[in-house]
Structure formats: C-alpha cells, structure tokens
Image (cartoon, rainbow, N blue to C red; front, side, top):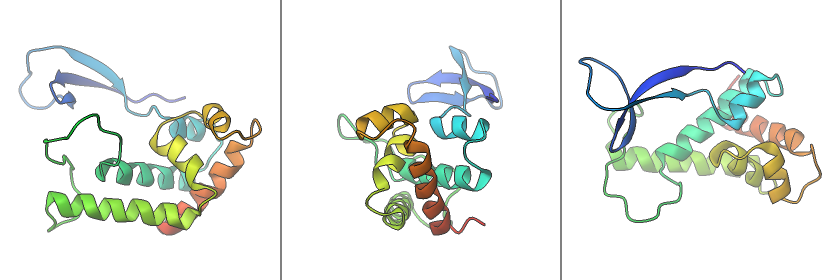
Length: 156
C-alpha cells in the first residue's frame, strides 16, 4: 500500500501542517492515505470512481460533524475551501444534506456497510462480523453501495 507521510506539529486542536516559520513543540509523522477504503483501492479491490465516491462521502460526514461527541463542542467548524458565500453553519448543514442524500440513494440495506467502512473506519472483516454477514461478502455489497453513492455525486 502506498503511503503518503506528512510531518505535522502537535497543537491542542490536533496535528497541524507545518507552514511558514517553524514552531516549537512536538511533531508527528502522519500517513494521510491510511483508511480501509484507501487500502481496498491500493490493493485493486475498488476502482478510482468508487474510491472517489467514498472519499466524498467521508468528507461530507466529517464536514457535517456527525461523529460522536462526548460533550458539547464550542469550537467553530474548521473547513478549508467549501461552498463560497456560506457561513460555517450553512456549510455544515449543506454537508449534512449531501451525506444523508447519498445514504438515501444507496438504500436502506447498504447504508450500514457504508457507514461502518467509510465513516467509522472499520475494516471489512470487522464490519462483516458486526453486521453478522458471511465472510468475504462485504466487499461485493460495499461496491454496490459505493456505485450508488458515485451516481449521487455524479462521478463519471
């Protein structure tokens, strides 16, 4: 699997990329290409179209801040780029609508595997066990789900 290692400076908010003047403090090396979906793509199990669809779904999941929180979050939404002319709340709501639209397009039987592998970062064997599916059935179902998500995002 191809790695994409990047040096990051640790801050109270998490790892940040180094830019401009060097900062004092600890740094870490992060593999930003590491995810179950990237692993499947790197090993030729899914094609570029399906990988792009999964990455767009994960991006919308993260931008919509749908992940679990232990307590209330007071920090602002940190999104680089995004929709022009929208404030942070509107960008978050737009990402939420796209995320739920993509899951609706996938269908009720395919949403579980999408969420587990793409958003929660579970491996296929772990997702199959959690869903009580037969071994090695998750890859086929994930491909079907990602194909529908790619249609939603209009990926050619």
